[in-house]
Length: 481
Ligand code: BGP
Image 1 (tube, protein in one colour):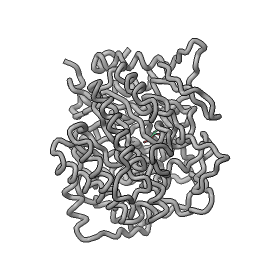
Image 2 (cartoon, protein in one colour):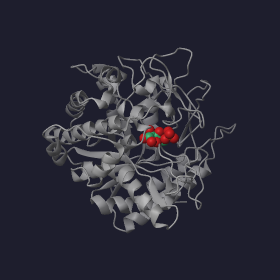
Image 3 (cartoon, protein in one colour):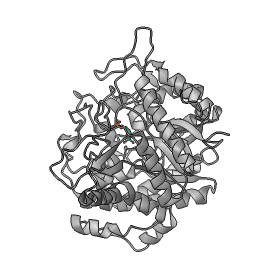
Image 4 (tube, helix red, strand yellow):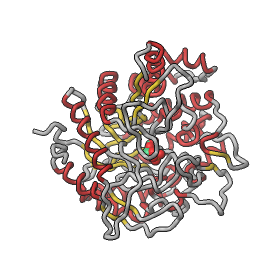
């Protein structure tokens, strides 16, 4: 008997825009991630709506997973993966986003990826939209701001659900959908861009909350319709949502801080989940919308669609936690799209993300308590600089420590009664960072010889964490050396 269930889904996660490369091959169109340049910690990437040949665009080549997927999946199989979470690039299937007919080359590519997984008995877990809305749709209708998007997204979903029926079981409708409750999610998650003529700074976009929340409403309707459609096409399909969960604590026991933390949690950690799991907007949304001057335009029938399209399971990314303070003078820290006040009891990664394994246990128990749906941690990991030794080894003991401590807390959550389906650490193979657009922030158990100056031969090398994770999986999480 092990603590994790017998069929626990151990694996890893990637996203097409951060690993595939081949940005313009086999009929692929341009996505919003293709117009983002490289950046680094402390220096935001740029959005260049008109591609500028002189700039470096890391997702154009990324780690060439499009070409090397067989080799990569073989390495995943060697670690013992039971599941591989990857995303489909919408622009490989519908290059501009609004075509009626899909691009066969794109569909065939993912068929090969899926077949390669199945060859090793690895369950594909597919994110339908992960930070790469077709840029054609941004230009056409400012993407999710417009209701038209529901139709384009549904055409895309239907194509995937019909094509991969019988081969795939698990789908996620949108990656980190709640990233759009903060300004950074507007372009990344929703494809919203208000300046189409000249380059702008990624982290310095004019923020229009009305657009983000109206866009979210369209995404909620689309997600619910996708859940329903998936079940109609194949009753065996299981469709989940996916959010960033950032455990949040009051900075002090001052009641003002506790209340601040409560409202932060409502909007950041629960708003999207509440809609997608409970099938209705939560009571606190109205007050928030009134305070921010947001007015959601709904069509007749939307509430019913949302009610009928609740998800089968809940997935989330977990990297860090932070504190909330009612004192607006408190300095804000860095983090996964959202900062918060640094916790004086925790240490941060080189990128300023506060490491908090116990916060993962807290997240799992909170989420299970609130929704009573099976949970899956579909992203977690440490972005760090790795040292490649002359003999080709990479001694990433810091990453092993991070993963070990988080898995130990998952165990505690399971012991506490949480129904946990699986764990797919982020960037099981090094890839391009979503927030900073750099290669130097590595998450993988597999090192990729590719660097921010555009050099490197894309060779894959096993880090110490590769062997460690292989042993963890083999023991179903019992052995955590
Ligand atoms: C999540 C995204 C991923 C991924 C990860 C790590 O927000 O879903 O796409 O990149 O965070 O973040 P980063 O790459 O910014 O370090």
